[in-house]
Length: 115
Length: 110
Image: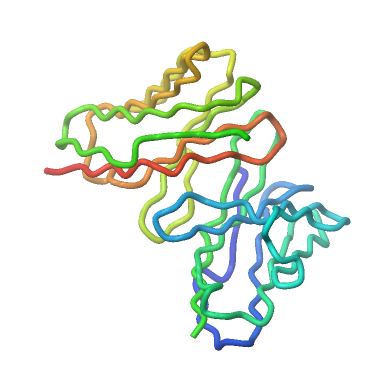
C-alpha cells in the first residue's frame, strides 16, 4: 500500500513554456503532499507543502508565481513550472504520508530539462 | 534550524557489512528514516524507526538509534552490488515535513 505515482517521469520543454507535473496517491488519501527539488550532488530541497482544498505553503526562496501548486482532490497534487528557464532544469519529486506512523512515500520523480 | 549530517561516501566489498552513519540535531525528532536512491530514480523508503526504539531489524537491514548522542546508523549485512546507491537519512516530528541529510553514496565492489 501507500503508492504515490508521479507523471511524467521526464519532460523536455522549450524556454518560456509551462510544464505540469502530477502527483497521485493511488491507494490512499493524502490531505498533504510535499514537493521537493533535487539539485545535482545535493539532497532534496523542500519547495512547498500542498494542502488539499487550500493554498500551498511555500518554503523561503521559492517563487509562488513560478511554481504553481494545486491540490484539488485528496489524491492529486500538481506542480506547474511556469515560463520555464534552463535554470529550472532539475529533478522534482513529490511525496505523501499514509498515516502518522508510516514513512513518507515518494513518487518516482520527474526529470525536467528546459532547452 | 534542524540539521541532519551523514558522511558522503562509503566503499565496501561485496559480502561485507556496510554501516552508514547519521547524526541529527533536533532532539524532538520523532521518526527517523533511511531512504535509498538509485540513479535517476525517486527515493525508496527502506526502513524507519520511532525515537523510543533502540534497534530495528528487517532482513539484511539493522537500524541502531542512540537518542542520547542523536546518532542513527544503518547496517546492511552481506552487501551486494545491487545495494550501490545513495542512502539518505531523514528525521521528522510526526506529521510534518522531512529534514534530509545530504546522502551517503555506497559503492559496492565485486
